[in-house]
Length: 400
Image (cartoon, rainbow, N blue to C red):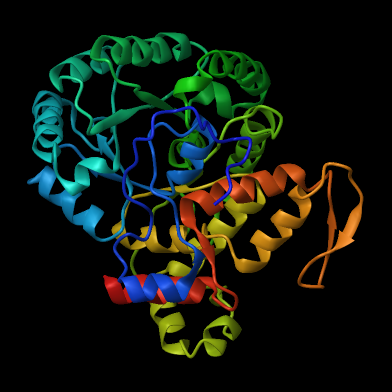
C-alpha cells in the first residue's frame, strides 16, 4: 500500500504481526483487496494509535498471565494492557507488579511477544521500576497513565521518556482522561488547553489518548445502561466532545480512542435491538445477527459506529468477544478506499462524483478524512468489493 504523509518512512523496518493474522489464508484472500500491513512499533505516533484497535485489559493478578496473553493473541487480539490500577486491590499491588514483570519475561521470543503490550501503572514512579526490572524487553510497548490531567502530565510523560532512554527502547505513553477537572465544565477548557500543550511536547511518545468514560460517569453517580450508548449520557458525551475538540483536531491533534463497552451477556431488553436485518439477510447470516443480539453486541456495534462518527478510532474493551466487532468496523471498505484515493489524487481542490456514483467527493474538505482512511487501511486492510463487516465478523466468529 502506498505510503502517505503520516508514515515515517525513515524509521527502522521492525515489524510485527498484522491484524486478522489468526484467519486462514483462503479466508484472508476472500476478504481483503489489500491485507492489513504488519504493525511496526516504529510507525509514526498517529498511525500506531490508529493501529491499536481493540485494546483489551487484563488484571495483572490473573493466574497464568503470560498464557492468557498468548491465548488472546492467537485469537486475534493485537493490543493488551496489563492492569495494575483499578483491577488490582491495594494489598495485591506488590504481587501484581511481580506478576506483570514475570509475564513480560515469559513472553520474550514468543509470537505473542510481538503484540502491542502496555502496563497500566498506578503512579509515575512505577514506570521506572517496571521498565528497569524488565531489562529493556522488546515485549513491553509502553505504559498507560490513568487519571491523567494537567497536574501530573509532565511528570508522567517525562517518566516514560526517561525510562525509554535508560533502557534503550522507544517506550510509548497512553494517557487516560477521566479526572474530575477534565469532566467538570468550570475547569474543563483550561485543563484541556494545558494538556494539549503538554501532549504536543511529547508527541513522539504518545500514540493515542484514551477516554475513561466509566470514571467520568462515576463522578455523577451514573452507570450507563446496556440499552444506551455513552453518547446518550449527556454529561459524558459533552466531556468527550470537548476532548476531541481540543486534542483530536486534524491539524496536529492526537488519536482519541473510544471508551469502554462494559457489557457482554444477555439481559432483559426495554428497547428493540438496533442492528438492522438487511446486511445479515443479504449475506445469509440472519442466524448470526440473532447471536450478536443475544450477546448484547448490537449496542456495542452501534457505539463503535458513533465513536467513529465523533472522531475516535479503536476502543477500550474488557472482554475478548468485543475485539472482533471493533476490528471488523475498523477495516476500510472497498468504497471508502476508492473515495479516499479519489480525494488524494489532486491537491487542486474541486468536487467530483465518487467512483461508486453515489456521492460527491470534495477534494479539500475531505482530505483529512482521506488521510485517516489510509491510516486505517494500513492497519486493518481494505476489503474486497461486496465484503461487509458481517463477513469479517462471521469469519472471526468461525476462527474463534
